[in-house]
Length: 342
Image (cartoon, rainbow, N blue to C red; front, side, top):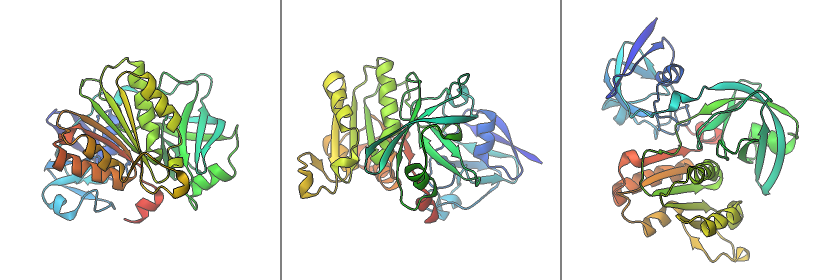
């Protein structure tokens, strides 16, 4: 049995099989519903159920609360239709432009750029090229059937290798392997590209690029792509870490600030120690944006990093700085530990 899904206001339609989620059916049909984690944690795919009925599988309350659900909100990555349905969602153009592929890849290079961060360079098969938008991610397909998501850290035109920034989460099955036993020339499998976090090129608004930790990876790709496209839009990057060493490509960002005419860089550290001799900005990175740009009504914000940072930025920028809700684009890096919190 299958059900018809109609998306408003576009009027696009696709079918959803019984037991399938609305989001997975949309991806299969090339319909661009916004999404991030695909597992009920980030809330990016939240929209409205206008007609029909769905049930939700397990998800986090912060992504969709019971009160929101009672008012007609739905989390499409966890919503299973029981009838034909009509939904309201902000469609993302161009999502179905590049095919999602399953590919083998060889580990070409491992570069340790911080105590707990590796830059992993992947070599694709000779006859394959991964087409993607800067900001998107891939999912590694692990032997136990689980998946791990990592954003591409280089723009698509820089395509000799696909590079990822992987932070070690001690006790994490995959990152323990990456930091402990993975070697150059190892073979991995992945599926991609995934996600709707990428530069909206139809806008000329100034951009605020907000990153915490390895959330810098897709932001780096977006900056490289914008430079390649010769954009004249002003860009300001706020990158936050607990300690200065967490800003593991600080020198690159300083170089951009020196050489790119419309680019500014603001590093922010929250827990500097005396031996760090940090003289820059301190505190929470999303608050630094509010101090410098109290009026965000004419901006676009691209935010990536820990869910707590992304959620706080979304709420505060819209409520206190006048940012239009539909000009906040985000990718919250949910870990297995985040998902376990439920």
